[in-house]
Structures are given as structure tokens and as C-alpha cells.
Length: 270
Image (tube, rainbow, N blue to C red):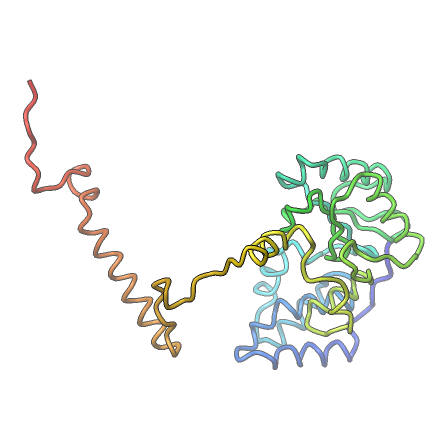
């Protein structure tokens, strides 16, 4: 059993896709959020969604498909009500991420990127969740569950399957995957202020700095040059910097006679 997939994009969603395209100076820049909105409506990136995005943005279906198949957050198969991602990258793996993933596979009777029979959970092994100080980490619909164990992970998915209200370890209310995709697309759900922006472990360095009165030096004292005032100045500055770097490289002894300075004498050996 899988979650019910919409038969077609709703007129509301099509209007919102046009709205997203209008938010950007170059409309094609809206493709990423538009694909997330398609997922919010249809539970995956469908052929219809690809076609509609292409029509709105003046792109071919091949161009849209190239993006939809490149990023792992875009799904081409029906998703469950909730997406559970277990980090098994280096630190999380060492701290127990592999064990958590294997336990959930057995508990849900699924493999990687598969959905439980009841359609409630899609389980995925994911790369770094950028929360190494809370390893091992699991995410539900992109909300953090820090310092997990196999037992706590199983408890979370069981509560989700039972339809209970669940909060992440940082306080955010867990909605459905589709609702989360709509937020990623750029349509707020009013829950943005739930929970802290960072967990305690991430703030330890800041707390120590505050206690000891440490502060970063001001920009003018660090030798940092003022930022260019316009795009034209930024491009010119980048071109000048690149040309200077290339000139230095061209003159480097490493590019001449195997790394020897041409002014250096060969010397003799007995």
C-alpha cells in the first residue's frame, strides 16, 4: 500500500507554480522550488509536473528531468506519509548510524529508499545531515532527531505510523512530508519559530567566547578589502585577481625546467 497520489496538478498548484516563477529575475531560477511544490501536490516528481514546469519556464522536458534526477531530494517514485532519513556518513556511522538504519530496515521490512507496506514511512540512507555534533542523527521530513539510538528511532517511526503527534528533539512539530515540501518550495506554514535554530552542542563555542570576552576582530583590522559596490565592479575585480594569479603561475619556477629557476646554475657533482 502506498500513499494516494494525485491524479493531476490542481489549479491552485499551477497558479502557485506561476507565482514562484515570478519571484525571480530569471524565471528558470524557480525550477528547484517548483519541483518541490510538484512533490507537495503529487507526492513525487511526475511526468505531468515536469511538463508543466517546462511550459511555464520555457524549458524542455529533458532540461527539467536533468535537474529532477540529479538531486536526491526529488523523488520519482511515490513517497510515504513521512520520509525518514538516517545519516550513515563517517561520524554518524561510527556512533551507531549503520545500526539504526539496519534496525529500521528490519522493523519496517523495507530496504533503502523503500516505503513500508502501510504507506506511512519511506526510509532512506542519507549522506551527511550537517549535524555531526549530535551524531547519530536521523531526520523526519527534514527535521532533526539528534543523538538517536536504535530504540529511540524505532519509537519515533512507530508513533508516526500510529498517527500520534511527534516533535523533533529540537522542538519542531512533525508535519507530513508533503507539507514539508510545500514549505521548502517557499510557502510558509506558520511553524518557522518552533524550536531553537541550533542545538546546545552547536553553541558551546559561542558560550565559551561570551564567558571569556572573546570577539572576532573588526573587518578593517583584518586586512579585508571593502566589497565591490556593484556587479560590474565584482566581475572586474574577479577578472583582475584571476589574471594576476595566472601571471604568477606562468612565472613560477615550478613550470620551468622541472621546477628549477632558469637563473640558477646547474652546479656539478663529483
